[in-house]
Structure formats: C-alpha cells, structure tokens
Length: 399
Image (cartoon, rainbow, N blue to C red; front, top):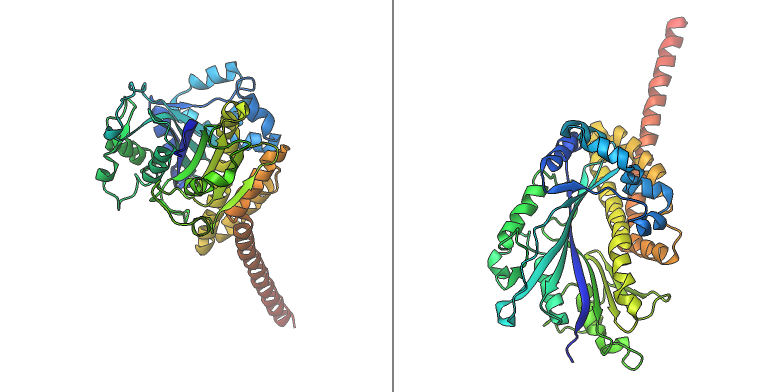
C-alpha cells in the first residue's frame, strides 16, 4: 500500500560564513534589500518560543524580544548604517525574505513534482556564521514517495556537480521564481560572500522535515514496523525506489520514540532531522507541526551554530597570530552558551541531547578545549622561562 500524507513540509538549511570584519557590511546589504525584513519577536505572538527557551538562550537567539513597539519604530527611523551597527552587536539577527504569492497549483503527475516556497529565513550570528533556511511544501500530491524524491533531489540544488537538467521534473510554484535556476541564483546572491571555514559540506543542504501520514497506514492495528523501511528512507534522504534492507540503511541512524507522544518517530543524523507521525492523533497534525517548526527548529539551528563555531575556533587555533585571541573567544563561548541550559521542557531537553550526540558536539568541544589548554600551558612555560632568564641576568649583573 502506498503511503498517503496528511500534511508535510521540509526546511532546507544551508550554513555559510561571513568574515567577521565584513559582517557589518553584510548586514547593511540585507537591510538595503527591500525584500529582507528583520523579524521582531513579540512575547504574545511568539509565546511558544518565549516560554520554551530559558532567559539566557532566549537573549542570545532572539534579542528582538526586548524591542517594544516604540523601540521598533525608533529603530526603523535610523539609517541603514546605524541599524547595522546596532545589529552587529546582537548575538543573533533573523531576517525574513519576502516571497511572492504562490502560483495556482497545476495538475497532472506527468508534469513532475510541484512545490512551493512557504518561507525563507536568513539567520545571522555575530561571529559571521549564518544559515539560510528555505521552507518548502510539495503541492498537488499526497504520495509519500513524492516527499522522498523531492527531498532527495532538492538538497543537492547547490551542488556544482549536478546539472540543473536533473531538476526539470521538479516545478517551482512561487511567482518570484520561474524555475530552479532563479532560485539557485538567489541562494548564491545571499551566500556569495561566504568563506569556507566551517569544515562542513557546502555542496548539499541539511534537511529538517515533518510529515504526517494518514492514520490508515499507522494505527492500533497497523504497527510502525509495517512502514519502517519507508521511515528509514525518509531519515536517510533516499529516493522512493531505494530498496536496500533496513539494517544497511539504518546503520548510522539514531532513531527514538518520544514516549510522551504516541505515533511519532524522529530520525536524527548529521544530514538533518526528520519527523514522521500518524494522523491517528489530531495533535500530530495540528500543534506538533507548529512546535517542530517554530520551537525545535531553532534549537536545531542553535546546535548547528555550536558545531560551526567550534570548527571556526579550531581553524583559528591553527593560525598562530589569532590563537590567543581565539582562546578568549572560546572562554566566552563556554560561559555564555556552552554551559547554559536551553530549556526546562523534558521533550526539548531530550531532543537537544540527541542533536548534541549526533553532531558530536561534546567531542568537538573537548578537542578545542584540549588545544587551548596546551596553548595556555606552553605560553606559561615560555613566560616562566623568560622570567627566569631575566632574573638570572639581573642576578649576574648584581654580583
């Protein structure tokens, strides 16, 4: 039986980095773009985010919560240069790129897979590490196979090794972009000034996906095991016709059931995060997709940022001139972010822990810490040796 979807979306996330001495200029570029708007978070409208994240993390990720209407109005009256100067001091600034209205959906499967771009966000951290996040939805199809094939294809649209002809059967449904080429041009424009210092795959998007399938496929009488193979393809971002056994494709996967919620499976991997749920429970296609998109999504971004920043510090350590300065950055990172609790929510804490494990954050942190510990010891030994030498000279002169 073919799986049918009730509701679905996928975020494709692209990490990139701006040189720190060019970060303010980059903010100016975004501020001058009339299609880019700063996202001002408001306590009432964004209550789920406000209540979920603990104060220190909330201040780090969403500093615009502190902006009231008067402050927003005053900020918007400033010139772009001054706005950028203010924003570059914020730990994180989030922009929303305004997409044109969706085109009326087309029918006929022979024409390919149609999709719409629901949202495009640019998430910028003051260290120059940024993330482009594109929310997509497959249109005019309830086939789970189309979700698999779309995710498999779309995540590679930035690859220089893949011809755009391979995307001819994937049709964009947004009036701002006539075809995939125009979308890739925009992606290049947004991320064009990047420098590759993150030690991450820059040829492929990370995937953050939600799909609710019909209750007829997963319920009290039809257990998860009957669709397990499809789930592993979903988590590994494989095409629908991939037929290798579960043992082989699940080898590197970390799959857990969140016991608080029934009929939910989440796959965590270095390629992204995929949630599959059943329409058996109305919560799974009403509140859950909202939480997954508006709360857990930013937790995932935060963990990706930690990974990228640790890679950045590791690269800076290799440059002897910057190594001492990088050590100071590492201390600040430890105090202001690494040791901070993210949330008091049990489910959120569990998911945060899983992302930490999958992204090897503890290992990355220890590696960087060990390097700076060695640097500190070497500097102290060198300083002690110089001091001893001066003392010896002074003693020799005295006697």
